[in-house]
Structures are given as structure tokens and as C-alpha cells.
Length: 201
Image 1: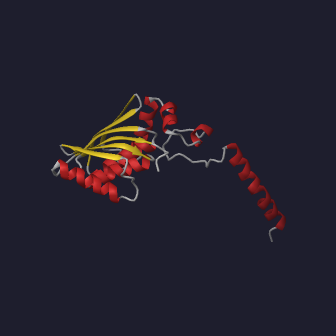
Image 2: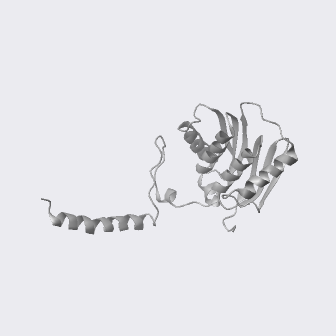
């Protein structure tokens, strides 16, 4: 029979241990990097970064390396995708099979720490042509009905099938959702000119 004293020790020491961890990490949760990552967990990496902090925290070379590493362990490791970071802007180019793949690669870039993404990825099959005015209206409708995007501060333009999204969003996730909506509306490509405004209601 197990001693009740052992249970008492566990019940008393576990909360103290957890409290010590929380105090030393400023209340942040420790996150273990995905397999294959060569990243060290440090107090700096545990604190959520603002966009300004991201630009200051990673050099162009570091950010490019992080994105490429994530692509290598993603379903797109064999895809023809090129990553280039210059003065904080991430340029994605190459070819993928569908629009969902483009959205997911853009999401990988943002999750890796990118604050600005110039999407030049193309489909490896012909795009179904659509009138620019109809495309603009279709994108605006998709954004309006999306439960994840505030369409009011977003401006939509369409030029030869390429949709340009400009304006403000609340976070990176909203950028990815807006891009996805544009592709679902029939865009050939999506240019991202959105900037993050955390104060946006």
C-alpha cells in the first residue's frame, strides 16, 4: 500500500514548482520547438513580440533561415518555392498546385516571424480568367461575410486578376484569412499591403 505521505508531498511540492516556473518565465508558457528546429528556448523567445519587436529581433538572414526550415519540414519541402528577405520584407516566389497551398505557405512565413510578405507564388496550372470589376466585388463580398475578417478598414483592388489588399488588420491571422478569402473569390494572385494595428476594434 502506498504511503499517504507521498501523496501529501506531491500535492504540496507540485504547486510550488509550477509557481517557480511561472515566476521565472514571467507567466509565459514554455513551448517546445517543432522537430528539426535548431532554436533555443530563452526568456526572450517566450515573450510575445509586437511587429516592431519582430523587425528588430531577427536579421534578414535569420528570418529567411527560419522560413526555409519550416518549409523543409512542411508538405512543401519538395515544392518549387523560393524565400528571399530584404530589409525586413519577405518575398515568396515559385509554383504550387492550388490556392490553399499559397495561403499555407504565406501562413508559414508569418508564423516564422515575417511582418511583411510580398506574395509572388503562382499556380502551376492556368488561372480561370475573370473580369476585374467582378473579381473586386467578389472579394469584397467574401471579406464582408467572413467571420474572421473586419472588412471595413480593408481596401480591395483588382488588376489583371491580381487582387491588392491594403489597409489595417488586427493581427497576422486576419491577414492570412483575408488572403484566403481573396483566392476563394477567384483571384489569380494576391498582393498584401496590409499592416497590423492592434488597437483596431
